[in-house]
Length: 51
Image (tube, rainbow, N blue to C red):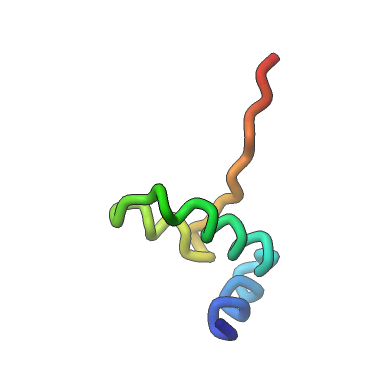
C-alpha cells in the first residue's frame, strides 16, 4: 500500500483520489484497460452533465 501511495505522490496525484477512482473503475475494466489506471497514465474520470 505504501508503494502505491508514494508512486501516486511522485506523479503529482492525490493518492486518495487516485485509489478511490481505481477501486471504483476496476470491476468494469478489461485487462487491456488496466495500464490506464497506473499513476503515470491515470486521468481522473469526469462526469459530463447534460445541457
